[in-house]
Amino acid sequence: MRHIKLYETYTDDAKRTHPVYKKIEDFLKQFPDNATSWADATDEVRDFARTAKEYYNELDLDLLVDDPKGLYPLDFRSIKTPAEWNKKGRDYIFNTVDMMSDKTKNAYMVFVSQYHVDESLNTNNKLYHKNDVDDNTL
Image (cartoon, rainbow, N blue to C red):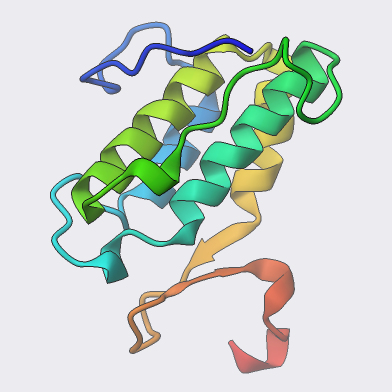
């Protein structure tokens, strides 16, 4: 498996012109890099990172799950703070998407587009997958 470099910055990069980057950034705004509470660093960041890795390994590298030639997952268990969770997760997601072909970026964009942020919900977890909510409750 390969490790990817985690860069300090992930914005203002001229090569990041594919619309998937904006979709990801818009979604990840809910998870600040300076988070102090675990309520601001939730499973969605880990799920987006895991799914980016799976899309890259399976669609671009044509590898089965857990093939040792694939991209290593980010070890979220070793992360100690909410800010680190969000920052490392965000960097991992963007750097993985950087390696994707346009075809895989398009497929990943469909995955990202299935998530919705509902600002009207008065809860800590405002995020939900479109398929998890009955349309009549919105």
